[in-house]
Image (cartoon, rainbow, N blue to C red):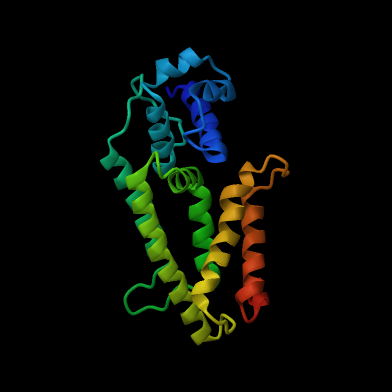
Length: 224
């Protein structure tokens, strides 16, 4: 039976690693946020890096801390972390790329895939992106995926303009950051805004896509 304490630690550590960073987060803070004793953390995990790796793998593997494992948990092998990140990001990039001989996905479909991936894996992607000192190799690996993502989004915009789906825009590549920030704020950062009322993920997605569809499509109403 999964240990409820692990789920509590996952939630607490995820929040702290995302909002204040891995280096600034102390084990005692994780324990307090999780509502358990600091000593209990060390009964569950061999070290603070073990907590970090647990959070990353839990997110990338989709079980969000609800696992049945032998305790205490040690640090994960870096190869496993790299393989899981590769599986998520490769599948993601394939989801917005054109298959051989096929047109690229419609702009709105691309946005939908972007949002869903950012929302589903937001904890791991946030941590890997913002904690390069703690995760140097994973961060470099992730940045290469982002470089590839820029190229795919630019291709999608160019293809959409040729089909008349996307309005004519100057310097498409310079719009990519605007598109990604529009998606990631609603999918990845909104859940951590303490002053913000809780908005369901489905509603956040609807708003994000509505804003970007109206910014880039020649006929935004065609999406409704």
